[in-house]
Length: 132
Length: 225
Image (cartoon, rainbow over all chains, first blue to last red; front, side, top):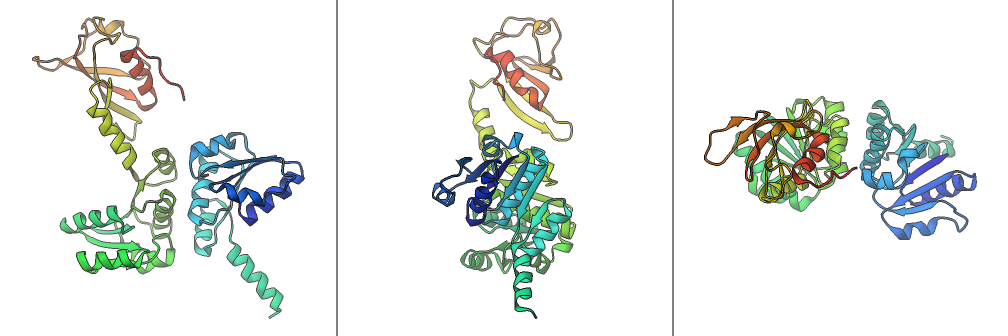
């Protein structure tokens, strides 16, 4: 599959490495070129400097032929904007978006975005580990 | 009207000042404490410290009874989210977003924002109208029908000079309506009207045909894409 990942932080880079190793065609976007150091030396995909909330940059990253798009920058709002552009303007089938804020996650889930809130999931996980 | 302004920077400050002067009830949401204090000192206690994208802050601000929300921070994505949260969680009927990236205009419209204002586009339009060599100038955008009214200036060297209006090959959905010629009364264009240098023509065209229409009068081929 062709997948575009926006945000090459720890999560973005980790996801890119895994999917790349499985043989998918990956393009990673980040505004900071230093962040690409987190990609493994074996990474065969494309690393592109640019802002994924800009439709032109997404086009350059090959969003038009992409099967999936993942937005994992540090900014909830940036993720939301890029995810909506990918889904509603470019018609990408599978769009997943990280939203830290649980309330905002709920809103965008209701608006039809596939969303993940690490806050909710991690809090739940910690609770289970505490076994209380 | 009760209007919520998200973002208390330069634009937010002067906008709120103007809206207050018109007698509206204004609440400004600003994350930065110093900006917040300045507004409260100078415009009266109308600024609340907080992130206008957060539902809890918007709730506290009484967004449920707001007639309008205007998001004027310098981040397009923040303005989008503030408008979407206001619209979908608080049923605010009119949302307006300020844009920096003009490309976002179409996108925001598609995502349900009622109105967008792109300062970049506004400046570009002014440059267009100030440049006499530019053959085409926007006058009005008819948003619903995706049509625009433009003014065309026939300049020296234009391939349209000396031609009968009826012989021009216009792009589809473009209509030349009114001829303004120096020293004459406005007249409707007829197929046998011969165009002269310095004529001004008012035309209606579809937004995506603008480039093609421009090409007819400038003689340069339309850019694609």
